[in-house]
Image (cartoon, rainbow, N blue to C red; front, side, top):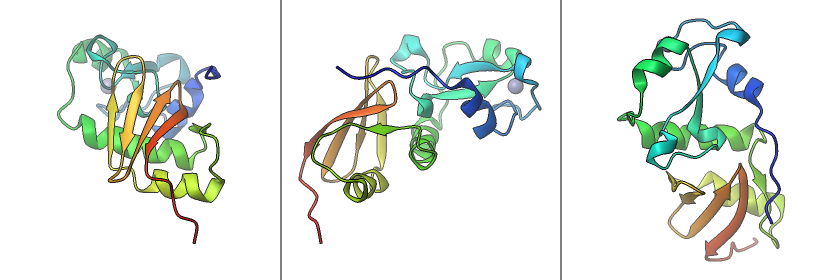
Amino acid sequence: MVKRKALDKRYIYLRDKQRCFYCGKPLKPGQMTLDHYQPRSKSGTDDYFNLVSSCRLCNKYKKNNIPVDKDEVQLRLFHRAWEDKKLLWEVKGYNKMESGRIISQIDTVTCKGDYSVARNKKQTLYIRNNVVYRMDGDRVKSF
Ligand SMILES: [Zn+2]
């Protein structure tokens, strides 16, 4: 079973430079709301790459819309989460270097409701609650 870590709201707040992701307004910690970039009602997950800081107004205004730049933003936030050590790798049999190499080549991230999928040309990663728990595809060659 995949371990669930408590969501680090402060991480998202600092990552988004203490501002609303949408309008750029500076936010005090108490003013910040978490917004699912891809709404939960439309298969968005609680992974860090699908959560942004938002002011109340933007959160309300956005409703259940999916932003047009969703794919690009989720991919960017996915790589950022890995760099910030907020994604855990729990697929057995891979060392840090190998997992890092696979992650660095990820070019597509898709939220599927209960889990997310991240892909590159050769591998597919499955992610739940910010944990990479399964991989399909080619093994990485060690050089
Ligand atoms: Zn805003």
